[in-house]
Figure (cartoon, rainbow, N blue to C red):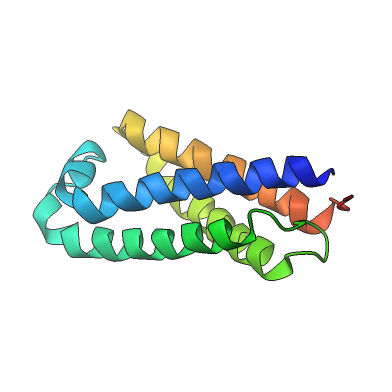
Length: 130
């Protein structure tokens, strides 16, 4: 994989996580409502904390955006994002398959699976070229 391709992946993921973080930090009840959570106010603080974690991942991505990523390069960044995306994809799959799942939940689940596959590829398959 070329360095420009890995840079594109890192930058796109950084922007995606950063935007999600900002939304979760500043509009947690609105997002909870869009996800169909019965009592959005009750989970607002948890969503804000999740937003803070996503913000941390986005900042990590911003720091490595110009580095070669994949294989053994940028390993800590790739491992962290692979773990986050894969566990997130697994956690979201069951509620998404449940009857009455919102379209927002379906989109989130799909995004997490795409991220899990991309970062899994970077971790296990990609051999970066400069």
